[in-house]
Length: 130
Image (tube, rainbow, N blue to C red; front, top):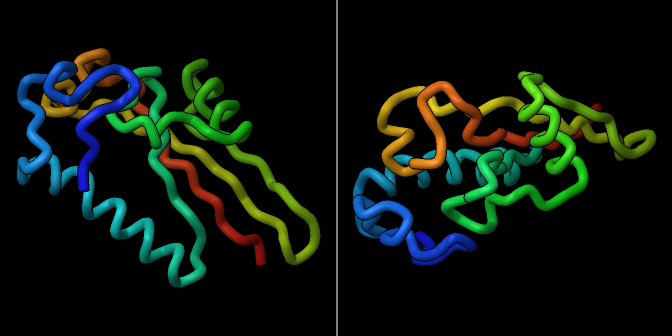
């Protein structure tokens, strides 16, 4: 199910090409989220897509944790990677964030607030340290 609204208005208001039943939208969103859920189910860690534009198409993609907010700030400053180790002993977790740039003109179709090559967001990983 795809959201009809976000913190910056409806998808149609943001981009007239948006259609929640569009196969393109399904293909862009669903495989990655299915992979993320599968990784977590197998105990391999968590992955989340986090917006860096300040105008997320889906409000749940906005930075939520202090780590995500610090990571996005670092990536906006030009860093390509941000990490921290959290917890103690066998509860240690590596938190890492990598850049998700607008890599092709099609990215700008759904994200009109950025230009090709600019930062769109981050993949944030939480991996158990064993």
